Amino acid sequence: MDKSKLNYQKNLLLIIVVLFWFAQYVYVPFQTPYLSTMQVSSSMIGIIIGIYGFSQMVLRMPIGIMADKNGRHKLFIILGVTASALASVFRIILEPQTGFLVGNILSGFASAMWISFMVLYASYFTCENLQRAMGLIMAANNIGVLGGFVLSTLSYNHLGMNFLCLLSICSGVPAILLSFGIKEQKTKTVKIVPKTSDLIKVYADKRLIFFSILALVQQGILMATCMSFTTQIAHEINASAFQIGLLSIVYIIVAVLASYFSASNFARRLGSSLWIPFILFVLAIYCFAVPNIFSPNLLIAIQILAGLSTGIVFSFCTSEAMKNVPIEKRSTAMGYYQAIYAVGMTIVPMIAGNIAEIYSLNIAFYLEGIIAVIATVASMIYFKYDNRKTIKG
Image (cartoon, rainbow, N blue to C red):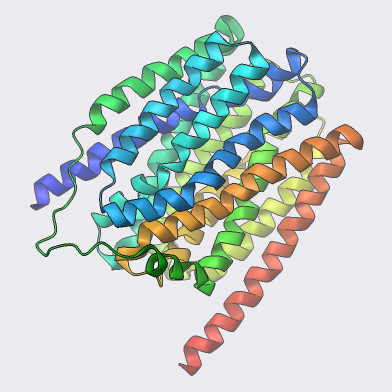
C-alpha cells in the first residue's frame, strides 16, 4: 500500500472510530440518573453497567485468537459498529431496565471488537511508532465520546433519553457504511495459519499480564466512578442536568488532550515509569476527593483528574503491554489485555453498587481509592525492578 493510500486508510479508520465511540457513549452521562429516576435499584444499575464489561470479558480473548488466525480485521469492525447501533434500538423499544440491560450486552459485544480497530491501526505504523499509534487512536476514541457527551448535555433535558439513543443509531449507521471501505495491507508471503496453542502462549508474558492488571484497575475504577456513580453523587448534591453533562464533557476533553500528549515526543522521552505511577496516584486522589465535594462546580473541575488517567495511564499501559508481543500474535495479546481490563469494568461497578446499597457511596469510592494506591505502589516496584534488569542486561 503506497503512502497516500496508507494515510487515507489511517484517516478513514479514525473517522469510523469517532463515529463508533459516539454511538457507544452518547447516552452514558445520563444513564445512571435516568435509571435511578425510573426506580431501578443501585445494585441493578451496577449490574447493568457491569454487564457491558462482562460481554467484553467473555468475548475478547476468542475474538483476538480468531483475528490472528484469520489475519483480517474488517469483518470484526463491521460487526462492532453494527452492534453499537442495534444496542440503542433495544434501549428505545424495551422498558428501561430490560432495554439497558440488553443494550449494554450488545454494546459490550461491540466494544469487544475494539481489538481489531487497534491492531489494524497499529499495523499502519512501524513498531517504533507503536506508542504514537496508540495515542492517536485513543484520541479519536475520546473525541467520539466527547461529541456524544456534548450533544447529550445539550439535548437530554429537553428531548430525553430516547433522543440520545436515536443519536447513537444515527452515528452507528454511517460507521457501518464507511467500514466497508476499509482496506488491509496485503502480505507478499503465503500466510501460515498459526495454531491456537501457539497463539495463547503469549498469555504467559509477564509484561502483558502486569499491564493488563493495571488497566483493569484504571478502567474498573473509571467505570464505577466518573462513568456512573459520580453522576449519582452530582444528582444527590442537586446538580442540574447541564452540570451533570459537564462532568462528562470536562472528563473527556482532558482525556482527548492527554491522549495527544501521550503520543508526543516529550511524554515518550519521560516514559511510562514516570507517567503510570504518577497518574494512578492522581486517580486515587480523585476517588478520595469526590465523596467529600458538595459543590457541583467543584465536582466538575475535579473530573480533570479522571481524564488524565484515561488519556495517559491507559495509552501507556496499552503500548507497554504490547512491547514484547510478536506482530503475528498481537490480536491474541490485545484480546487478552482487553479481556482482563474488562474484568475490572464488570466487577468494580457491581461491587461498588452493592457497597453503595449496603453501606454508602462514600465507602465505595474510598475502597476504589485504596485500590488505586496499591496499583501505584505496584507499578513503582515493577519499573524499579524492570530498570535494574535492563541495566544488568
